[in-house]
Figure 1 (tube, one colour):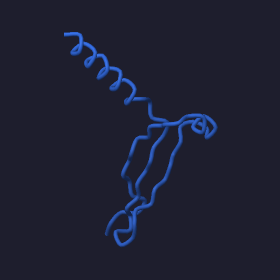
Figure 2: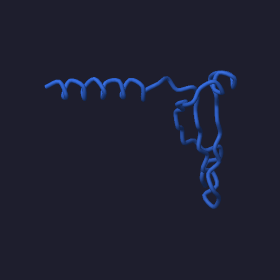
Figure 3: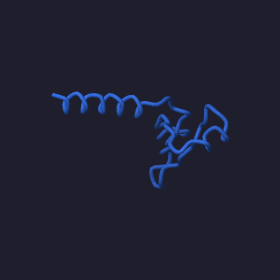
Length: 69
C-alpha cells in the first residue's frame, strides 16, 4: 500500500513539473517543400530569464509564411 501511494505521489509531481508555463513559441515554417523547414523562436520573455534556467518549455506552432500553390 505504501509503495502505491509513493508511486501516485511521484506521478503527480512529475505531471506538475512537466507542464510548466511555456516561455514562447517554436514556429516551424515549411513554406518551401523542397528544403528543410525553417525554425523561428518567438520569446514571451527576455533572453536573460531563459539563460538562468536549465530547462524551458515552448509551444510548437507549424505555420507557413507563404501559402502552397
